[in-house]
Length: 85
Image (tube, one colour):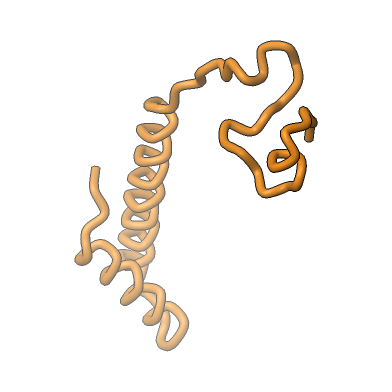
């Protein structure tokens, strides 16, 4: 299911018409149908994105302490003294 310009245009047209002059019963049914198509397409996109998310253990957090993966801009990195954030 995809969201194309014609679907968006139809949703917008029916919305404008609903506010200005009202919709017939058939248009109300179409409005509900195209809105459902739009929402289903959005949900499918979100689900697809979430299905591809991978959680990876961060070796910098293995001991429970978080360390930056690259030097930060605080003065401790320039002094050569160890420090934590």
